[in-house]
Amino acid sequence: MEFKFDILEDGSAKLVAAIGEEAVVSIPDTWQEHPVTVIGERAFYGRREIKRVRLPKYLKKLEDYAFAECRFLEQMELPETTQSIGDYGFYNCIRLVRIDLPDTIASMGYGAFRNDTDLTDIHIHTQQGNENRINTILNETNFNQTVTFHYKDGNVSQLVFTEFFYEETANEEARQFNHRTYGTGSLYRNCVNGTGIDYLKYDEIFEQAIHRDEPKTVMDLALKRLSYPYELSETARKKYVDHLKSMGGEMLMYLIETKRWNLFPLLTEGEPLSKEILDEGILYGQKNGVPEFVSMLMQYKNTHYSAMTKSFEL
Image (cartoon, rainbow, N blue to C red; front, side, top):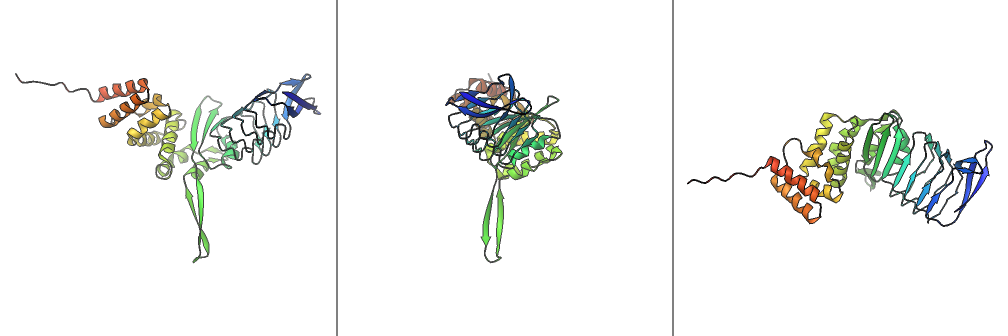
C-alpha cells in the first residue's frame, strides 16, 4: 500500500492518504526519518477491504473519521503513545470485535465507536480511578460488552456490561408516555463514574440480572467475575458460585459450548452437584468430543458419589 504524508510543524509526519487494496496494512513508524504521529482525517475512510492495521509506534493522534466506515476491520491495538481519538474515529466499523486502548489515551471524541455492533471485547490499560475513560464507548452502546481492565499494579478485572433497551408506550388517558427498561445494562454502566468503578455496586446488581437478563449472559458475567476476582467480596463470590451451580446441567452445557470447561473447578465448593446433573454433563461432553471435561466430571462424581460396595449374606 502506498502512503502519502505531510510534515507537521514539530517535525513529525501525518498520514493523509493511503492508496491500495490490501486487507492487512502496516503503517511505517517513520517517513523520511520523520516519526509518524498522526493518522489524518478520513485517511482510511470507507476502506472496506481492510481487516487488520498495524499502527506506527510513535502515534499520538487519530483524527476525525480516521477509520470510519472500515466495515471489515476486525481488531485494533493502539500503541502506548496514543493520546487521542477524534470524533467518529471508528464509526460504523461493524466487524470490529476487539480494541486495545493504552493508558495514555486522554480523550475519545464523540461517536468514536458508534454503531460498532460487534465490539464486544475491549481492553483498557489504566490505573484505579481512571476507568471512566471507557464511558465514551459504554455510553454509546446498549449491547453486551466485556471490558478487561489491565491495572498498572498487575491486577486484572474483567466485567460484563449487559445489554438493555427502552420501551415507550403512550398512555392516552393520562396524556403521557410510560417508559420501561429491559435488561440491566444501564445499571451496570452507571457503576463507572468519575472516581473509577464501584465494584460493590456492580456485584449488588447481580440479583437483578438473574431475573432481567438472558441466562447465558448471566452465566458469562458470573464466570468472568469469578475468573478475575478483583475487589470481589466473599459474599458476592458465593452468590456468583451459588447461582452457577443452581443452573445445573445448563451450566455444564454452557461451559462446553463456550469451551471454558477449565473453569469448572471454580464451582466445586459447597454442596456437590447431583449425580443426575453430572451424568447429564458427562453425556453431553461425550457427544461433543471433550474428553478432558468428561474426565473432570467423572473424577468429581467419583469423589462425591463413590460406588457403594455390594454385600452379600452367605
